[in-house]
Amino acid sequence: MGLEKKAFDGTAWHYARYRWGYPEELVGLLVRVFGLDGTGRLLDLGTGTGQVVFALGGHFVEVIGIDSSEDMLVEARHQCGSQGHSNVKWLRLSAEEINSDLGSFRLITAGRSFHWMEREDVIRRSYDLLEPGGGFAVLGVGGIDDDDTSSWQREMRRVVDRWLHTRERSIQWRTRLQVRHEDLIRASRFRTIGHGHYVFRRVRDIDSVVGFLYSTAYANRVVLGSRAEAFEAELRASLLNVEPDGHFVEDVNVYFVLARKDSAI
Image 1 (cartoon, rainbow, N blue to C red):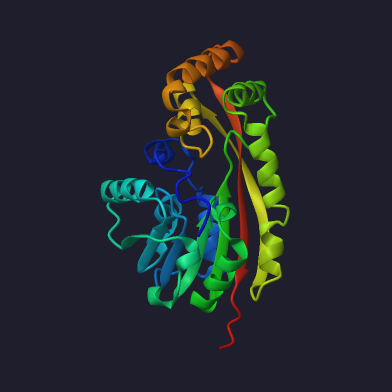
Image 2 (image 1 turned 90 degrees about the horizontal axis):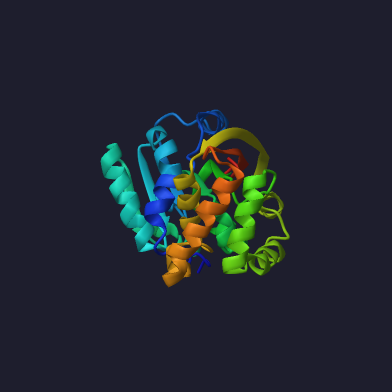
C-alpha cells in the first residue's frame, strides 16, 4: 500500500483551496495526444481532492477517482457536488490495489501523487487495466516548497525547518526517488511518448502561503499539533518582513510524463 495513506489526513480542506489546479495548456495536450473525445473512462490514482478529475472529467463518459484517505474523498465529493459533475465515482482504494474489478480505461492518471506510490507495481497494474492504445499520464503542479529561488521561499524554508526539521525528510525522499518517473515507465511495457513541463507565474497572498503549507504532509496542522498557532504567527511575521506588501510571486512548474499501451491486442 502507498505511503500516503495517513500522511494527508487533516489536510483536505486546505488542499482543495490552496493547491494550484491543472492549466488549460496541459489539458489541451492530453486531449490531443490521447484523442480524448468524450468517450471512454478515466481512472485517477491518488486523486486527493479531485484536481485532475475536475480538469479532465468532461472529456470522458465516466470517471473514477481513488484515494486511500477518506478525508480527501469527503472533500472531493463536496467539491464535485458544488461544481456539478455527474459522471464521477469516488472510491477509497490505494493505487496498489487496482485490479480488473474496476473495468478497463482509456486513460489512467496520477497527479502529484505518483511519488507516494509503489511506482513499479502501479505501472504494471495500470498497463493491465488500459484498453489497447490507452494512455498513462503522470502529472504534477509544483508547489512553493519545490525550490528556493526567491527570498520569501528561502525564509519560508528556514522557518519550516526550524519547527519541523524537514531537511532530513528531504534527503530521504531524494534517496527514495533516485530513479525518475519517466525512466521507470520507459523500462516497463509502456511505450513512452514523452515528458516535459510548463512554467507559470502566479501570485499568492499570505493566507495562501500558510494554507499551502497546511496542505502538505510535513507541515499540516495535525503534524504541528498544539504548536500550530505559534508556528503560523512566526511564519506570517517572517514572510511579511521579507515582502511587506503581502504579494508572494511564485514560478509554478507543471510537469507531465505521457505513455501509451501498445494498440496490438
